[in-house]
Length: 97
Image (tube, rainbow, N blue to C red):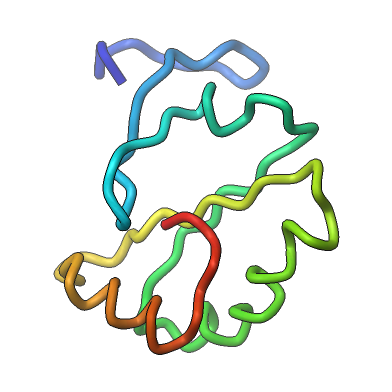
């Protein structure tokens, strides 16, 4: 967010910002939502057992619902990018993190 002190309200437009992607580059909500009907933002961790249970479902979400995008935000403190990349490779994850 460009102005951290700016308050947001439900139903109001959010200022655009970017998040770094695990595989390089970055992604803004506006670019992620382009051409989609909806999006799911999931707070995710490579070591969370609940997240692991949803691997197959998340991998298939785009195929099942092409108008919906899934973006996982790696949100656990102290999980390095290297650890996350290893998890993605080991579990065959295909959604953006």
